[in-house]
Length: 306
Image (tube, one colour):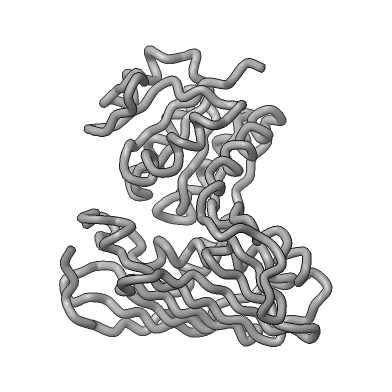
Protein backbone atom coordinates (compact mmCIF):
# COMPACT_ATOMS: atom_id res chain seq x y z
CA UNK A 1 0.00 0.00 0.00
CA UNK A 2 1.32 3.46 -0.91
CA UNK A 3 1.94 5.64 2.10
CA UNK A 4 0.97 9.32 2.12
CA UNK A 5 3.74 11.86 2.57
CA UNK A 6 3.52 14.11 5.62
CA UNK A 7 5.67 16.96 6.91
CA UNK A 8 6.24 17.53 10.61
CA UNK A 9 6.58 21.14 11.74
CA UNK A 10 8.20 21.85 15.10
CA UNK A 11 10.77 19.21 16.06
CA UNK A 12 10.75 19.46 19.84
CA UNK A 13 10.15 17.01 22.66
CA UNK A 14 6.59 16.00 21.78
CA UNK A 15 7.49 15.50 18.11
CA UNK A 16 10.50 13.32 18.89
CA UNK A 17 8.85 11.39 21.73
CA UNK A 18 5.48 10.73 20.09
CA UNK A 19 4.93 11.92 16.51
CA UNK A 20 8.09 10.51 14.93
CA UNK A 21 7.75 6.99 16.44
CA UNK A 22 4.05 6.90 15.52
CA UNK A 23 4.78 7.88 11.92
CA UNK A 24 7.62 5.37 11.57
CA UNK A 25 5.32 2.57 12.73
CA UNK A 26 2.34 3.66 10.60
CA UNK A 27 1.26 1.81 7.46
CA UNK A 28 -0.44 5.01 6.26
CA UNK A 29 2.29 7.64 6.46
CA UNK A 30 5.77 8.47 5.20
CA UNK A 31 7.61 11.24 7.06
CA UNK A 32 8.89 13.21 4.07
CA UNK A 33 10.19 16.44 5.61
CA UNK A 34 10.67 18.35 8.84
CA UNK A 35 10.51 22.08 9.42
CA UNK A 36 12.18 23.49 12.52
CA UNK A 37 14.59 26.22 13.55
CA UNK A 38 16.94 23.67 15.09
CA UNK A 39 15.45 20.19 15.44
CA UNK A 40 15.97 17.41 12.91
CA UNK A 41 15.13 13.74 12.38
CA UNK A 42 17.94 11.57 11.08
CA UNK A 43 17.58 10.70 7.42
CA UNK A 44 14.67 13.09 6.77
CA UNK A 45 15.01 16.25 4.63
CA UNK A 46 15.06 19.22 6.99
CA UNK A 47 13.90 22.78 6.35
CA UNK A 48 14.22 25.85 8.56
CA UNK A 49 11.77 27.97 6.55
CA UNK A 50 8.15 26.92 6.07
CA UNK A 51 7.60 28.95 2.90
CA UNK A 52 10.58 27.26 1.29
CA UNK A 53 9.18 23.85 2.18
CA UNK A 54 5.78 24.72 0.71
CA UNK A 55 7.39 25.90 -2.53
CA UNK A 56 9.80 22.98 -2.94
CA UNK A 57 7.72 20.05 -1.65
CA UNK A 58 4.46 20.27 -3.53
CA UNK A 59 4.21 16.47 -3.48
CA UNK A 60 3.70 16.46 0.32
CA UNK A 61 -0.08 16.85 0.79
CA UNK A 62 -0.28 16.78 4.61
CA UNK A 63 1.28 18.96 7.31
CA UNK A 64 1.29 18.08 11.01
CA UNK A 65 1.93 21.07 13.28
CA UNK A 66 3.68 20.41 16.59
CA UNK A 67 5.00 23.85 17.57
CA UNK A 68 3.57 25.82 20.53
CA UNK A 69 0.05 27.18 19.98
CA UNK A 70 0.79 30.91 19.66
CA UNK A 71 2.67 30.80 16.29
CA UNK A 72 0.65 27.89 14.92
CA UNK A 73 -2.14 29.82 13.17
CA UNK A 74 0.13 31.40 10.55
CA UNK A 75 1.58 28.00 9.63
CA UNK A 76 -1.82 26.33 9.46
CA UNK A 77 -3.25 29.14 7.34
CA UNK A 78 -0.30 29.02 4.92
CA UNK A 79 -0.56 25.23 4.64
CA UNK A 80 -4.30 25.34 3.90
CA UNK A 81 -3.89 28.14 1.38
CA UNK A 82 -1.28 26.02 -0.39
CA UNK A 83 -3.74 23.11 -0.63
CA UNK A 84 -2.37 20.95 2.20
CA UNK A 85 -4.40 19.02 4.75
CA UNK A 86 -3.52 20.04 8.32
CA UNK A 87 -3.25 18.17 11.61
CA UNK A 88 -2.99 20.24 14.80
CA UNK A 89 -1.31 19.18 18.02
CA UNK A 90 -3.35 20.00 21.10
CA UNK A 91 -4.44 22.63 21.98
CA UNK A 92 -5.42 23.38 18.38
CA UNK A 93 -4.60 27.09 18.67
CA UNK A 94 -3.95 30.01 20.94
CA UNK A 95 -7.58 31.21 20.67
CA UNK A 96 -10.94 29.75 19.77
CA UNK A 97 -11.51 32.36 17.06
CA UNK A 98 -8.40 31.42 15.11
CA UNK A 99 -9.36 27.74 15.06
CA UNK A 100 -12.84 28.63 13.83
CA UNK A 101 -11.14 30.65 11.06
CA UNK A 102 -8.99 27.66 10.08
CA UNK A 103 -12.02 25.39 10.08
CA UNK A 104 -13.81 27.71 7.67
CA UNK A 105 -10.74 27.94 5.44
CA UNK A 106 -10.39 24.16 5.29
CA UNK A 107 -14.07 23.75 4.43
CA UNK A 108 -13.94 26.40 1.73
CA UNK A 109 -11.02 24.63 0.06
CA UNK A 110 -12.23 21.04 0.45
CA UNK A 111 -9.38 20.16 2.81
CA UNK A 112 -9.07 18.24 6.06
CA UNK A 113 -8.42 19.98 9.37
CA UNK A 114 -7.94 17.72 12.38
CA UNK A 115 -7.84 19.25 15.86
CA UNK A 116 -6.34 16.35 17.78
CA UNK A 117 -6.85 15.38 21.41
CA UNK A 118 -4.38 12.58 22.04
CA UNK A 119 -5.80 11.61 25.45
CA UNK A 120 -9.11 10.70 23.82
CA UNK A 121 -7.17 7.90 22.12
CA UNK A 122 -6.07 6.40 25.45
CA UNK A 123 -6.82 2.68 25.69
CA UNK A 124 -9.74 2.87 28.14
CA UNK A 125 -11.58 6.00 26.99
CA UNK A 126 -13.89 4.29 24.49
CA UNK A 127 -15.02 1.54 26.92
CA UNK A 128 -15.52 4.18 29.63
CA UNK A 129 -17.75 6.19 27.31
CA UNK A 130 -19.74 3.09 26.43
CA UNK A 131 -20.22 2.14 30.10
CA UNK A 132 -21.43 5.63 31.06
CA UNK A 133 -23.79 6.03 28.10
CA UNK A 134 -26.93 4.82 29.91
CA UNK A 135 -25.94 5.84 33.46
CA UNK A 136 -26.93 8.85 35.56
CA UNK A 137 -23.80 10.69 36.65
CA UNK A 138 -24.10 11.79 40.27
CA UNK A 139 -20.65 13.34 40.63
CA UNK A 140 -17.24 13.31 38.98
CA UNK A 141 -13.76 14.48 39.94
CA UNK A 142 -10.51 14.90 38.03
CA UNK A 143 -7.12 14.74 39.75
CA UNK A 144 -4.45 15.68 37.20
CA UNK A 145 -1.10 16.37 38.88
CA UNK A 146 2.25 16.17 37.15
CA UNK A 147 5.75 17.63 37.10
CA UNK A 148 6.25 20.42 34.56
CA UNK A 149 10.03 20.02 34.88
CA UNK A 150 9.75 16.44 33.60
CA UNK A 151 7.38 17.03 30.70
CA UNK A 152 8.43 20.55 29.63
CA UNK A 153 12.07 20.86 30.75
CA UNK A 154 13.21 24.45 30.39
CA UNK A 155 10.28 25.34 28.11
CA UNK A 156 9.48 28.84 29.30
CA UNK A 157 6.83 29.28 26.60
CA UNK A 158 4.35 27.27 28.69
CA UNK A 159 4.35 30.11 31.23
CA UNK A 160 4.09 32.89 28.65
CA UNK A 161 0.76 34.33 27.40
CA UNK A 162 -0.86 31.68 25.22
CA UNK A 163 1.19 28.87 26.78
CA UNK A 164 -1.79 27.82 28.95
CA UNK A 165 0.26 26.85 32.01
CA UNK A 166 -1.25 23.94 33.91
CA UNK A 167 -4.05 23.78 31.34
CA UNK A 168 -1.54 22.37 28.86
CA UNK A 169 -1.86 18.98 30.63
CA UNK A 170 -5.23 19.81 32.18
CA UNK A 171 -6.86 20.11 28.77
CA UNK A 172 -6.00 16.44 28.26
CA UNK A 173 -8.24 15.57 31.18
CA UNK A 174 -10.96 17.86 29.87
CA UNK A 175 -10.73 16.21 26.45
CA UNK A 176 -11.46 12.86 28.09
CA UNK A 177 -14.23 14.24 30.29
CA UNK A 178 -16.05 15.88 27.37
CA UNK A 179 -15.76 12.61 25.44
CA UNK A 180 -17.08 10.21 28.08
CA UNK A 181 -19.84 12.13 29.89
CA UNK A 182 -23.30 11.35 28.50
CA UNK A 183 -24.43 14.98 28.96
CA UNK A 184 -22.57 18.30 28.55
CA UNK A 185 -21.43 20.41 31.51
CA UNK A 186 -20.31 24.00 31.91
CA UNK A 187 -17.90 25.77 34.24
CA UNK A 188 -19.37 27.73 37.17
CA UNK A 189 -16.28 28.69 39.18
CA UNK A 190 -12.48 28.47 39.08
CA UNK A 191 -9.50 29.26 41.28
CA UNK A 192 -6.19 29.78 39.47
CA UNK A 193 -2.74 29.90 41.09
CA UNK A 194 -0.20 32.05 39.25
CA UNK A 195 3.47 32.03 40.28
CA UNK A 196 4.61 35.55 41.12
CA UNK A 197 7.01 35.55 38.16
CA UNK A 198 4.77 33.86 35.56
CA UNK A 199 1.91 34.77 33.19
CA UNK A 200 -0.02 31.48 33.22
CA UNK A 201 -1.33 29.34 36.12
CA UNK A 202 0.61 26.50 37.69
CA UNK A 203 -2.45 25.05 39.46
CA UNK A 204 -6.22 25.28 39.11
CA UNK A 205 -9.37 24.17 40.89
CA UNK A 206 -12.50 23.97 38.75
CA UNK A 207 -16.19 23.56 39.57
CA UNK A 208 -18.64 22.57 36.84
CA UNK A 209 -22.37 22.01 36.62
CA UNK A 210 -23.52 18.48 37.31
CA UNK A 211 -21.43 18.14 40.50
CA UNK A 212 -18.19 17.84 38.52
CA UNK A 213 -14.88 19.16 39.89
CA UNK A 214 -11.23 19.16 38.84
CA UNK A 215 -7.86 19.61 40.53
CA UNK A 216 -4.90 20.47 38.26
CA UNK A 217 -1.35 20.97 39.54
CA UNK A 218 2.00 21.17 37.75
CA UNK A 219 4.21 20.87 40.84
CA UNK A 220 3.89 17.16 41.65
CA UNK A 221 7.19 15.33 41.88
CA UNK A 222 7.59 11.54 41.90
CA UNK A 223 4.70 9.40 40.60
CA UNK A 224 2.31 11.36 38.38
CA UNK A 225 -1.46 11.35 38.91
CA UNK A 226 -3.89 11.30 35.98
CA UNK A 227 -7.23 10.10 37.38
CA UNK A 228 -10.90 10.67 36.58
CA UNK A 229 -13.47 9.22 38.98
CA UNK A 230 -17.20 9.15 38.24
CA UNK A 231 -19.99 8.09 40.60
CA UNK A 232 -23.19 6.92 38.90
CA UNK A 233 -26.52 5.43 39.86
CA UNK A 234 -25.11 2.02 38.95
CA UNK A 235 -21.62 2.11 40.41
CA UNK A 236 -18.24 3.80 40.38
CA UNK A 237 -16.06 4.31 37.32
CA UNK A 238 -12.42 5.33 37.44
CA UNK A 239 -9.98 6.06 34.64
CA UNK A 240 -6.33 5.76 35.67
CA UNK A 241 -3.05 6.40 33.85
CA UNK A 242 -4.45 9.27 31.80
CA UNK A 243 -7.40 7.29 30.51
CA UNK A 244 -5.52 4.09 29.78
CA UNK A 245 -6.88 1.88 32.59
CA UNK A 246 -10.61 1.51 33.34
CA UNK A 247 -11.85 0.40 36.75
CA UNK A 248 -15.46 -0.37 37.63
CA UNK A 249 -16.20 -0.50 41.35
CA UNK A 250 -12.47 -0.71 42.05
CA UNK A 251 -11.68 -3.58 39.67
CA UNK A 252 -9.66 -3.16 36.43
CA UNK A 253 -11.85 -4.20 33.48
CA UNK A 254 -10.23 -2.67 30.36
CA UNK A 255 -7.23 -0.85 29.00
CA UNK A 256 -3.46 -1.11 29.25
CA UNK A 257 -1.06 0.25 31.85
CA UNK A 258 0.81 2.49 29.42
CA UNK A 259 0.45 5.95 27.92
CA UNK A 260 1.90 4.84 24.56
CA UNK A 261 -0.30 4.21 21.53
CA UNK A 262 -2.30 7.43 21.53
CA UNK A 263 -0.44 9.09 18.66
CA UNK A 264 -0.58 6.03 16.44
CA UNK A 265 -4.36 6.20 16.81
CA UNK A 266 -4.35 9.92 15.96
CA UNK A 267 -2.49 9.33 12.73
CA UNK A 268 -4.80 6.46 11.80
CA UNK A 269 -7.72 8.83 12.32
CA UNK A 270 -6.01 11.51 10.22
CA UNK A 271 -5.56 9.00 7.40
CA UNK A 272 -9.28 8.27 7.43
CA UNK A 273 -10.15 11.97 7.43
CA UNK A 274 -7.85 12.75 4.51
CA UNK A 275 -9.24 9.85 2.46
CA UNK A 276 -12.78 11.18 2.98
CA UNK A 277 -11.75 14.87 2.83
CA UNK A 278 -13.61 15.58 6.05
CA UNK A 279 -12.57 17.48 9.17
CA UNK A 280 -12.72 16.84 12.91
CA UNK A 281 -12.65 20.05 14.95
CA UNK A 282 -14.17 19.63 18.43
CA UNK A 283 -13.28 22.61 20.61
CA UNK A 284 -15.23 21.66 23.74
CA UNK A 285 -12.10 21.04 25.90
CA UNK A 286 -10.68 24.41 24.88
CA UNK A 287 -13.99 26.13 25.67
CA UNK A 288 -13.69 24.98 29.29
CA UNK A 289 -10.16 26.39 29.51
CA UNK A 290 -11.27 29.71 28.06
CA UNK A 291 -14.14 29.81 30.56
CA UNK A 292 -11.73 29.10 33.44
CA UNK A 293 -9.50 31.97 32.39
CA UNK A 294 -12.60 34.20 32.18
CA UNK A 295 -14.24 33.18 35.46
CA UNK A 296 -11.16 32.25 37.47
CA UNK A 297 -10.21 33.93 40.73
CA UNK A 298 -6.49 34.70 40.51
CA UNK A 299 -4.24 33.79 43.46
CA UNK A 300 -0.53 34.68 43.45
CA UNK A 301 1.77 31.93 44.71
CA UNK A 302 5.52 31.37 45.05
CA UNK A 303 7.76 32.18 42.10
CA UNK A 304 8.62 29.21 39.90
CA UNK A 305 11.79 28.51 37.92
CA UNK A 306 12.96 25.44 36.04
